View 1 (spheres, one colour):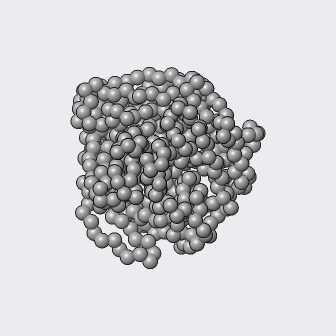
View 2: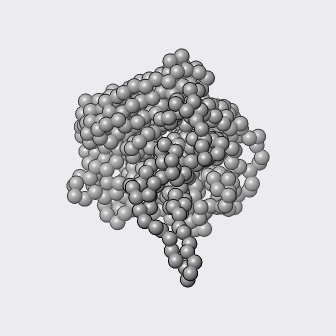
View 3: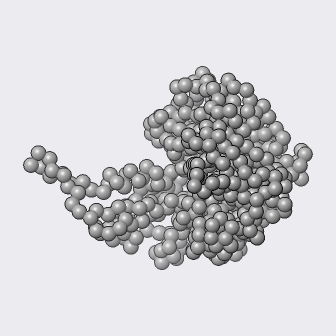
Amino acid sequence: MKRTTLSLIAVVTALAAVTGFAALTAPDGTPAAGGGAPVRLPVERSSLLCPAPSTSEVAETVYTSYTPAGKDSAAKDPKGATDAGKSGTAEARLAPAPAGVTAGETPPKKTSAAKPPATVTRPGTPVGAEANGGTAPALTGTATGTLAPGWTVQQTTLVPVGGARGLLGVTCVAPDTDLWFPAASTAKERQDYVHLTNPDDTAAVADVELHGPEGALASQLTEGIAVPPHSSVPVLLSTLTADAATADITAHVTTRTGRVGAVIGVADDKTGSDWLPASADPAGTLVLPGIPADATSVRLVAYAPGDDDADLKIQLAGATGTIVPASAQSLRVKSGMTAAVDLPDLTRGEAGSLLLSPADPKKATPVVAALRVVRGKGDKQEVAFIPATAAITARATVADNRSAGCTLSLTAPAAAATVKVTASAGTQGGTPVTKTVTVKAGTTTAITPPVPEGLKGSYALTVEPVSGGPVHAARTLALPKDGIQMFTVQTLTDDRGTVAVPVARQDLSILDD
């Protein structure tokens, strides 16, 4: 009789498919003991994917890479560096990803690769890099060791003129297998490209389904979209269907094999361009944080992926409380169909966040949602998108904040909450500062975030819940240009810097005859 011992490696590997890798050691560095509840350990590997920023020759792109300092960083090294421990040398690096080719297309011409962001050398200090013109490629990257927990990269692009003009901001995304994008479009005035990036050594095959107000749009692609290893494929949504142009659709990206990072680049003839990130997973209650105070147009787009219709109550959480907008108090979303509603004069000069909840609390039908937000009027308009965003459970970070033009919106939809906001050192110098902010129940607190003392360059903002109820957050970056109120909004999502590792309570051996 042979005895084969099963370790927890298989369990950790399964968890790593979503959140990275964790070593089997306790927070103080000692081996995890058996018989207790699961312990949360720092991930040891994180992957991020950045789409190709622009095709415009006048585009100016800034990348900012950052890992928050751990709780023990200062104790281990006054300069902020931490010991990589058993995980080996810590590293966080991005590399160019060549453009892939979809069926029927000719291979793209070779272009000079943009220099990716510098390697992060220690937690707590962001680094930046620039790439100009329309040849900057998509980037794939991995952080390991002490640089993995909470690693984030912000890609910010300014296109001052042309049909794709605007300020485009996106937090580079982790690979996934199932993503929803409400507020996409195949309308004639829109050019919506879904960028599919494969970080792995094997090819991925992705499907993109489009759902309009009448249901699923007829697909012209039945074999899926092949995304070669370590490559990126941009696909124009309007080429995926023979149906008539549709203003409001929901794009659903899934993979048959492998995994991809996905984000939609939007260019509108009238309102400029920005990135549309994926919505939070389908849920009965959603929060869409960070609507600017001077928004001139807000359009809500929602989709119900299940078998049941959804009747949603619409509320706005402002500075003093939660109200029901006079322009639209509810929205009915039929199963398998995309619904949209305009919310004129929504903010009335007061920054806020939209709350969606079931009209009947006993019938919470899962939905996904996003906002299309416009500032300015006439030929001075600028667009941005705000997807539904989950609450911050442990920590969330957004990089590339400037000394001016930033607003941090914090929303506590259910109960009062207190959070700690930390401004990191700057990319070229500065001392971190921390501020505690309390948000009243049912309100949105919009603040000018703290700025590092002696700031040089840009910096990162980290939000950590301290007490109270759930908190949702978003950062607005505004860079006015030639009379246009150019802006972009990035929602803050939990960085999943730790992973719960189950601890064996008994012998997990199996007996082989």
